[in-house]
Length: 313
Ligand code: ASP
Image (tube, rainbow, N blue to C red; front, side):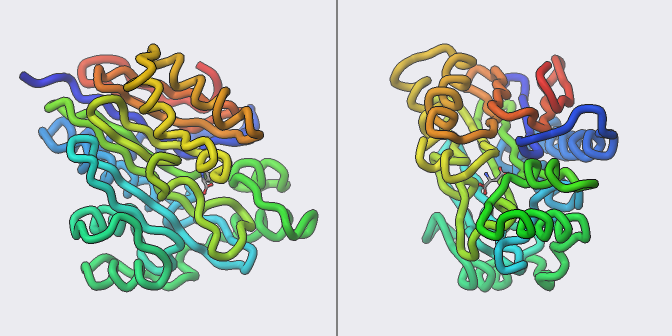
């Protein structure tokens, strides 16, 4: 017996100003949704669908993942990504990579390889190259908008670390880009999650956020849900946010929407964090809560509802 597929994705959370032209951003979200849906509609797995969705977002220079990644305090780019298969609990993640075009593909290769679950820095880049993944020069990730956003933040406070949307909102004419992620349930009822990011603007060199930390920014388990988070990564790690949602469903048996909101409000926000998450539970329900001004997001259910949104519905 098969079930309708479900897909949701995000393009980051933070201070998002109303009234600006969101058209290109929404187009990017729609294109990524279509890429993931094509996989699911063809009978593909949730894991393949979330990777395909995130690759589309990494290729779009409007988002803080792959091209368009934010600058760290050294004026460089270090990218994080993870994937998790809810069917087997198999995991792959990379942290602080600097050369691979699609960090989510590198994460997928770590999962396939199976010897480790998280590879970092030069070793991760070497592994990605050895697996035949496309490599780029570090300058390839940079965009003029990102550089301006970073310089403006440093001029105000050289030690500050900001969510990309927050840094962009504070910078005149700042570009709005965001961490990306996807969650899916395929027709066989299996769940998967993927997240990819350039991290936070002006982060310390070597800083790793929540995205590649399983149970913090990414988690999937057929017994409960698939989750991809976006927000102030340190808080999501401290709150074990993604696993917290899993635990609320699996052990506390909380209603899905309540559990998703409580994960943010009683976990992340209660220690000063902000951001949001996208999640799909085993029954195929979608939750897209955020405790920031907005979160770029899109979703689709086979034969059912679909949408693209930035602010409260
Ligand atoms: N969570 C990401 C990080 O802390 C940033 C973001 O979601 O925009 O690296």
